[in-house]
Structure formats: C-alpha cells, structure tokens
Image 1 (cartoon, rainbow, N blue to C red):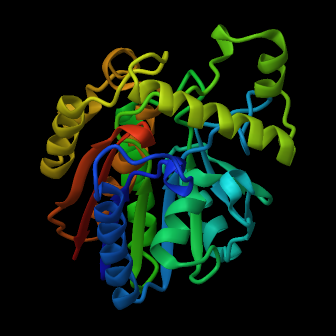
Image 2: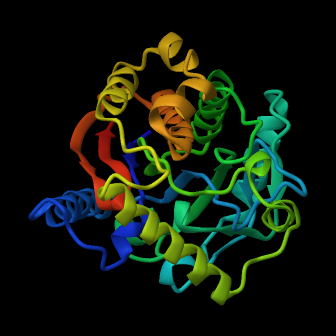
Length: 314
C-alpha cells in the first residue's frame, strides 16, 4: 500500500505578526512546509489520517479520553482560522474504531469532534484546506494529565496502521502534528485558579473574545521568553534532536521509555505532543518500509518551539 508520512510542528504563533529574531528563518520554515505540501499533492492521497492533540478547545476534563476517532469533525476558529467541517468518511472511521476495539483499545468515538489548531494548522498548510481530502481525525490526549504512556501510544499507532492496511490499494498520508520542545502558558488543572479550572473541566467552547484574550497571552509569553524574562521554558535543541534520532531509528524501547516527568522538566509542557509523531510513525511502519528524513529543524524562539518537519514515503 502506498504510504506517506509527515510529522510537523504546528506552533500557532506562525500565524501572527510576531517579530522575527533570526533573519529569514520564518521564510525557510514556510519553504520547507511548502515542499512537503507539494509532495503531498503529488502523492494524491485517497485518505489523510491526522494524529493530533487538543488544547482544551474541543476536549475537556468533563470526559477526557486517551484516544478518540472522529466520525465527523469541525475545525474551531482559534488563531484566526476560519474553521468549518472536515471531510470525514464516517463508515471508514467507525470501522477503524471497531477494529481498535477488537485489538483491545477501548477508543472513544465522536460524531461531533471539535479539532483546534493542533489539526487545522497542518491540514491548512499541507493540504490547503480543511476538506480538500478525506480526513480521518485521530485525537491523542497530550495536554490533560494523566496521559497515555508512550508505549501505549506506539501500540495504538501500530493498531491504526493494521486497520489501514486492510483498506485496499489506497494512497494514505499520515500526519503527526505536534511538538517538538515548547512550553506555552497552557493552564494545568492543579496549578490554576478556580475559574480557569472550571473552564478546563466544563465542556464549553470559548467565545471569540476569550480565544483572542488567550492568544494575546501566548504572544506576550513568547515575547517575554525571547527576552528571557517569562515563565516559559525555552525550547531544548538537545532534547529535540535526541527524540528525532529515536524516531528516525524507530527505537521502540527508547521511545517507550520517555516519561512525562522528563518532558515537563527539560522539554516543556507542549512537548507531550510528540506522542502524535510516535503514533503516526508507528502506523506508517505497519503499512510499509519507511525511511524518515529530517527536512527541517530549527528553534524559532518567537514561536516558542523547536520547529521540525520529518517525512517519508513508501
């Protein structure tokens, strides 16, 4: 089965007019993601499978699944993205959920999945629209403690890959959207005010005014970090490159050994999102022999993130 894999960082700060700290670096990143987009269109996928996180815009502590398959999905309007429905093949998505249950993954399903910039940014950048291709949205909880272990995420990805392998001669593009090291001011349930904790628990979509206020705080946090005076940890190139090496080699034991404590200490709260890269890569490997290559890596401080793009085609 023809398979394409793209793992990419998705910092929403790239959608803002925040000041550039390294001359020409934004242009270099956008050129690289543009090349990945060109390869995707040349590949002409019949199905795009997005492994993505959420940032308390669609999934809340009211009921937080470790994994969820979207049977229908709509993009939220965070960070100025227009939003709108994704083109989800419902029958295939339901079959995927049933397959995962048969493999002893009690995956949640959603007939009304809300996907934020964790999925909409890569879809817009790589495909040009939210509904240009059939999309299977696969949510992995990366923000809400407790999270699924890296070993569980890897095995989950492999199970998704085995399902996709039974779908006939389809061109399948898998996208892992998240990471690398970054420490945005995402609220933590155990370290926040009662009012914010209520928002994290209660399933209520933020208003446009609330979205804009939250996003302004992130922009300010990025500016503060650039000036080394904010609470956010800076991106960690050593950790990023170590993780990328493990993923490129697909060192399952080393990937499984990554802990939340390690990430929180050295890579930042947002780095938990590399689970999406592990899940997507595991799925791709079930579909064919892939050789991941690093198309781009650079810390972009004003985007708060170690920005990476990895890809493979088999």
